[in-house]
Length: 202
Figure 1 (cartoon, rainbow, N blue to C red):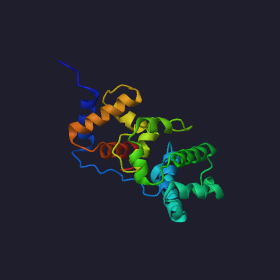
Figure 2: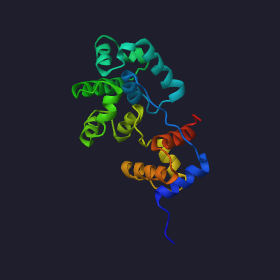
Figure 3: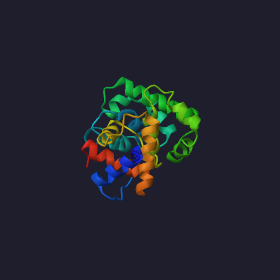
Figure 4: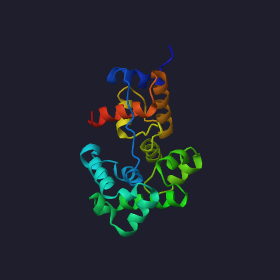
């Protein structure tokens, strides 16, 4: 008897743990300052209680930062650590570097970034920013309305529960994408449902 594939194992586990859906994708942001800060600051933080309130406040306090150009102008004269109320020089540096890269590449709006991420070399350029790996690139895509799987520790734990091995990032992402196809779900919606369950946000 042939052993089930990682995708099939994940599909069965999703159905058993989460039901048939539908699973709505989170939608992301139209405010590029929030997109950049979400991608830069969210890792290993409690999202709903710690990160989300700060992003909502940033969006309200810096309405002119809805574009990359506007956000970059704000950063030139304001302390992002103070605006986000996070004492994390490394994450602040990542946000600045992401902003500078996107500005230099002519990416200004949510739709610009959505389209720009179609190209493999653009995704590789993002990973040249210190603090940005493949998970952050996929997460950025979801923040601007793409339907992608961003594999984090919660998705790895979910996979481990059904014996899916500790696969390299791209192979596990592909397994989740294939599981979504098997179940008829949008990848980002299914991913977010798994993340909510495993992170305790549900």
